[in-house]
Image (cartoon, rainbow, N blue to C red; front, top):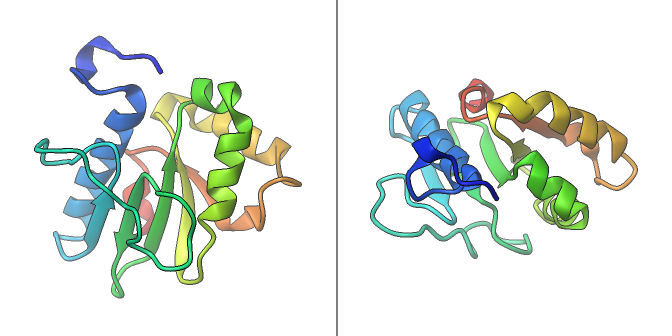
Length: 144
């Protein structure tokens, strides 16, 4: 993954996770529970999403969990990462199917169109593809 100069020590994927968590926190007025993996939005330590939601395999990159808001299971990727390992992205999206949660493929804003095209091209491989949305850190607050 590319590390961009304005991201500091974060990869592009980690940066979108951090920004999405910050924006969701603001949008929900801090009332929703947000778990992240790879990065702690407060910058103190890596987050962890393992075993936060029963019945899913793996570790989503971000989980928004609250009864007052749309609950989200988020897989963050870059187009480069998807192209390098399409099987991983498809597996994550399929593994993160869970009742009561919206699945989100989170990508950098400039890559949303290309990610949507990739998702459409893989409709036969992603289970219940209509339940998956492609978002950027900028647009993800619109889901809650």
